[in-house]
Image: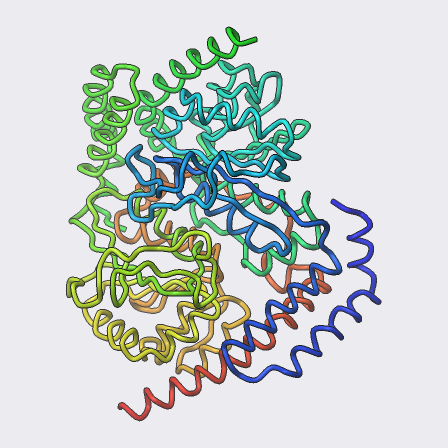
Length: 289
Length: 289
């Protein structure tokens, strides 16, 4: 969090100036969709003038078989930031669908930038999870080499869900505390990482989130790191992120034993594959160094 | 919740049979991505045999300027169900982008079915929110007529965020308790609805969710209604939905006053438009009846 920005924002004089500026545009607002949108955008720009920092560059890997919510959760938070470029990165610009499984069957995602065209510098390098596409990525030299290179100049190297297995396969979590989907967290040890429970685990500039829905919590934490706490709170209110799942089965130790037992068994084959793939990836990492 | 299914599922004999069946496939699992996926799918199919009901038909409206997370949140929950058809519905099959604003700038969504081809019967009819595309939909006779017709035979008529304004403009919330994004909840009164605070508000077969991120809570509640509580708990664990926003600013009464003041002002122009659009829509509804 940028204390200077936070102090500027928190000062009453700041709010006065901010609202004064917004009122100018608001006074000019006719009751039309376009002007409402202009007012909204102008207010957000002014908010950014006062609380934002330098322009941000955010690179998000997309791949066949990724889990759509893993990508859209953080993307929703990042898109709420002003003064940023967000790139969806892949080998080419062909839409990545569900040929690897995952949850992009109904909504294929078209990459916006190829690995070759990507800028050398990202504030955030992000990898979503997905089963079983994740396993394919863990052994794809083009993907692993791109991540290893891009991570060198990235301010934050991040993932949600099983995306951390891809970071690990790229040799980026060796000696780092990290998390993953609860069912694959211990697989990280095969990749030299230190499996660590937590919705979000931060170790130096590596920030890994838990399974799927952790992407919203992860994205909010990144907003606070990239801008400041007040900016994150404003976006939390904007997105009405006041969760209430209604049931309390979001973690193995919280869910009814019959439910945890079922999912543990359902994931058994997937875990076999994850461990075997991680061991092969780590052997390659060791042979390179 | 289907008590019969729940009782079947909860019985130990059921778990034994379920796991026995899964073990059969697990024993055949080689450590390959494909077989892991087959095992996973087979386990889910068996889970559905034991806990699922009849095949579900879910229709989700998509439109230019919708908010992507509003759609993807519930979609993530619905896709975790087995034995269901999910349709993304629009006038035609052209991708809906961000020409209406919203958050589909990076990920346009291609509809999977046109209004004309849609089945007459949906278990769930769903409308996502979005600014300012929502306002355009509130005055689009083709969209409003489709929703009014489809709702007649729908088991649940639902929305997340400002999607409830579209349902209201279609005359579907007259006399119903309903919610919306916190900043537009009171607009519902202009459409004959009874604005009601709540993450999820249910009145007869109308189920409306709060802003954007409420879609995950909404989707989980629908899964419990469509199948049963244990099924919902299993999907909650599958998606590791154990939220921890880190900040406590997800509602106007919880956020720091300076943050709430800023967003109230930022939304002022949008609210002017929402009220004006709702009044026009309601006049048309009254003139039709």
